[in-house]
Length: 514
Image (cartoon, rainbow, N blue to C red; front, side, top):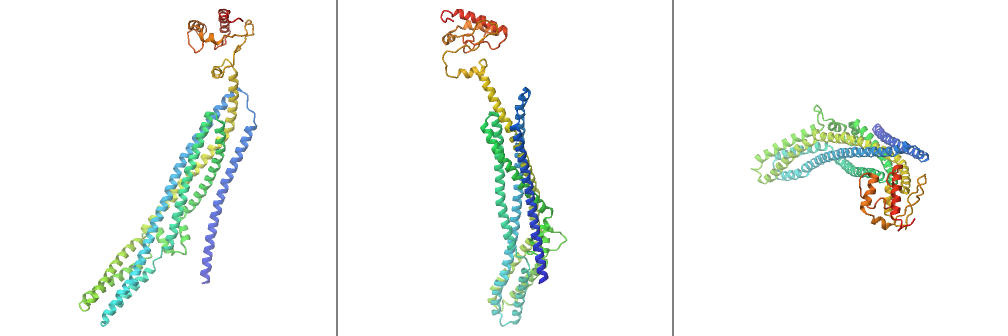
């Protein structure tokens, strides 16, 4: 007893050591992912500080290239994000298929184990209770015939042999309960894992769309929101990378030697020869239940022969025994049917196929899906890091363009400024839009009234338009009538404009004295 107890304690300590080592390895991988996240955040913080503290180049080429660089960088980041989501969808689907194949195999194995327990318990019940009742009544009927009583005792001995052989078949109740709990927990965790990754994919796509929309609309609010959510998405990407890496490494360790892992787990619950029989299922290996099933079959055959003999010889003398003998014969027939079903269920081929299907699901589809999910996490982290790096440059570009637009609005000859002024409320009588002081005369202002502008003849306007463009053209307001210079400012056209303006002033001089 003492050596056996010491050996059992040694096995338990080895198992605990292996579990502790596995947990430490997974924690180490999580720590590596955490270090990667820290380095990424430190790099982003340093880059943002450098960008915010740096002075913008005033060169024209730099100003022209900077928005283009921001645009193309954002486009590349968006494409990388879309590619990451595509890879993630494939990996999530593969992992889900592998896990559900594992659950399906566990359910099949549970069905087989439950069937074995039902057949064994049912046959034992028939031999212990039902057969004993019939034999007891027959013993009372055949009380005067010693040879018949000897036959009944022999049948009782055969039934005892069957019960002893069935007792050698393992009871799978505990294994079935553990496998059921494992399948339920795995399905629960897998459902929420699949749903979480699906939501993460949607979040990444929405953030990429908002980033592109913010850059296209030059919206600082959208850009700030995307930058804040991008940091959260970056944290989620590194977290998913840590989880995927830990799960992939743990699954890889199991898939390297799954037979040894199962032998270690089932040690103490099942005999090693039984476990090896189902794990390897070689044609040369004999079944550990072969002897028990052979004795079972021989005992049933012997009992059939005895019951047939009693029906032929004892029933003419004891007609009341026929009913019990027929009941025993039906019981033996059902027991023989149970024997064939038990032989099929105890055969290693069915359970070994379930075992291989489970390994295929977890070690091929599941592991492949985890690797693709890890690739998704890396690409998503790269994409959002790029978006965060682009953010400050885009913000500066927005500020610079706003200042440029303010300068454009101050230019009275800019078409966009005139369109803005057309929608602004009236400010009373307008002063001259321009003054010419570089040796071009003393014309300092042109103040045509609004009524004259709207009532100018079309022919006069077309003649004036020919002077400037060569072809007559129409606008909502005549160019000369609204007191504005021509669109171009060449010296020849400016001189022409002044001469036409003088004629225009002489024409309206009586109504509007200078």
